[in-house]
Length: 197
Length: 93
Ligand SMILES: [Zn+2]
Image (cartoon, rainbow over all chains, first blue to last red; front, side, top):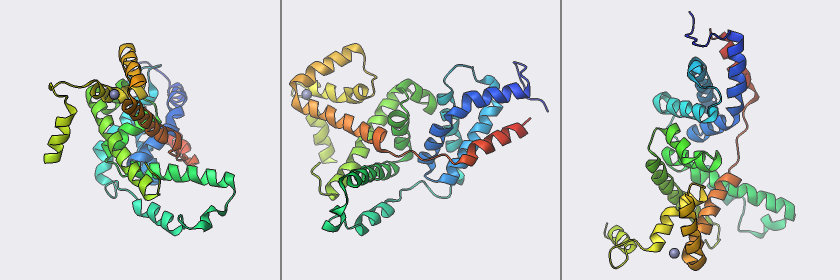
């Protein structure tokens, strides 16, 4: 049962190279998986599957090329081909959770304002982060994906086109539409919190 | 449906061509993503020095990108994950 190794690396050499080049991408990859599946266990499975696939095809990976883009592409394909079908539920938002939190926390009352300035700043940061997360999670997965790739992971349009197997023009228009709907959702939130947007 | 038509219609200036501001709107994403060419950048920057609505659109678009890049919390990778990946790889012949 031998792998087709064109380069005749020993198993140890191959493993060492694999770990050195690809494991550093674990953190962004897991975050991407989580934003796609919205579930920690699913993200875990998806990332493991991605690394196993990458290992099988590692001989075809050109050393020194963009390992991060390569892994993201494998993960996105696994997500589409296999994962989405068997996923427990269509990835949907947990808006209710966030809303419940705001309502029960007496945001309008004076009671909530009694904390120190530092704590307030920190919790405002948290609120913004939570709200951005739920607005993002409420987007269709294709929209969510381009925003994550671009704004969170800093991929170029060209890299995104390769990861997603779509032309650059499609990357641009999808990103544009994705940002418009994200904007819409966040503006609704700003209004509901009594800010003038 | 009617309103959508109106919207599209308004985007065209009277002679039926794109206005300068329409072109600027199309460059917004390229600008905030650092994907605009040198020419596009100078066209864009010259315009927003003169045009308040486009200047504001640019500010808003930057803000939106900043909300995602600066506020979205990263999830923490479970410690066991790297270990189990390594273990499964070692098993693979
Ligand atoms: Zn303008």
